[in-house]
Length: 249
Image 1 (cartoon, helix red, strand yellow):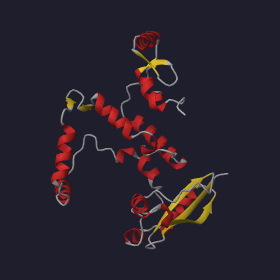
Image 2 (cartoon, helix red, strand yellow; image 1 turned 180 degrees about the horizontal axis):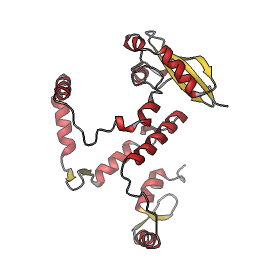
Image 3 (cartoon, one colour; image 1 turned 30 degrees about the vertical axis):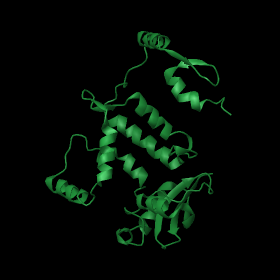
Image 4 (tube, helix red, strand yellow; image 1 turned 60 degrees about the vertical axis):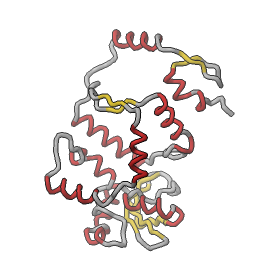
């Protein structure tokens, strides 16, 4: 059964609140909201100091958003006692992704007045000498591919990045995307490829291309996992073996 409802999340420390819409199959899924300011507040005060209270249930998500628009008005958003940043009824995350054109600035530029405002706002944040030294040290030895304008990471950098994001260090460790996020991301990707060039559009893996791929994979250097003794490619080893091998107990 799908539950569609409008909820209010309250900060138990300062009584600030956030009103939103949620759709779920499990009322005990632990969801308490996904607003930008709300998430920052949760990070600051801890999830245990917030309480989510369902306000009203609806048969459809559209009805829930309509009711949200009645509660989350422009006056509500302007209040310093709330975490909402936009008026209700737009679906928040759904609304952003469902109209990708409004957030895609490809081929456009800021006006001079906007540039000035951005510049003035950034001047408030001055980097310390230690911060500058850290940035400088991190750039030593790096090379840039000017052809693609992307950074080319060295073997040591890739290893360092991998180690920093393994297991519990990974931001998504033990977490799962909500159904709301999955639906919004699906809409975003569909609109993106609908309105932008896609290299694979209208193409398929024909016999020759597939054969070339098979040959290139056959010629890849192989390595043996020290835990399960399987012979595999370097790519598969980095993804599934070594310290990530399932045979490690």
